[in-house]
Image 1 (cartoon, one colour):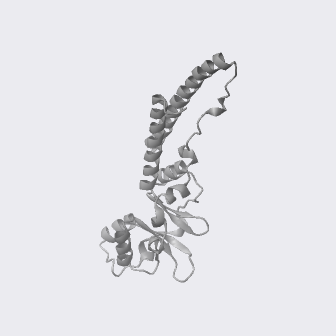
Image 2 (tube, rainbow, N blue to C red):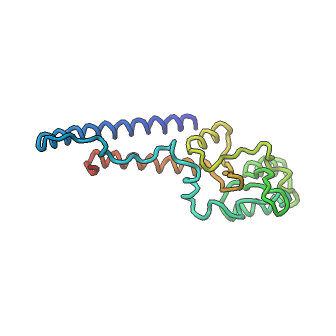
Image 3 (cartoon, rainbow, N blue to C red):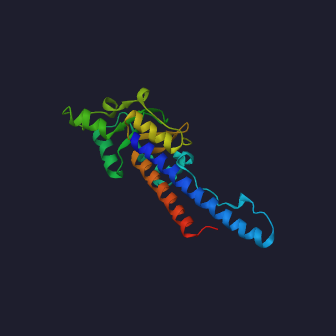
Length: 208
């Protein structure tokens, strides 16, 4: 994953450099033509607006691409729920983790329950999911790693890499959603596609 982060940054730098070089060269040529005809100076302020780089894409924006599925009651379970019920919830909604809340009406976070917890502490130890409570096998709140919604996507990627985790709850005083490594990779791929598309359009002369 470290290599992927470096590769993404290097790719961005190459693409931006190529676009800028092509763009500047083009406007120098067009500027000279215009000056020779009208005797005026072309301002460099006519350059196209640059699209956002990964460092400017926030976790909130990535959550928005997930639509209404970014948050809901199904994203959480209670610490006194059985592991069987929690796993059924995860399977039904095709998700790999649940934020665990303490019993009661308040949204107090107790920890997080993931596929890894299930495999290691239920399957690996031969325990019954039907008679085991989520609180017994979850990752406790004092070990819980979270992100605010205004964190950028590169920070999220770095955090997941350093901590060897695949799911991070997004919390702004309350649960906003859950971001996964799949969401991060998808955002990176989409952003790089956009960079390549813009570079091709510059080369073909579709930007003026």
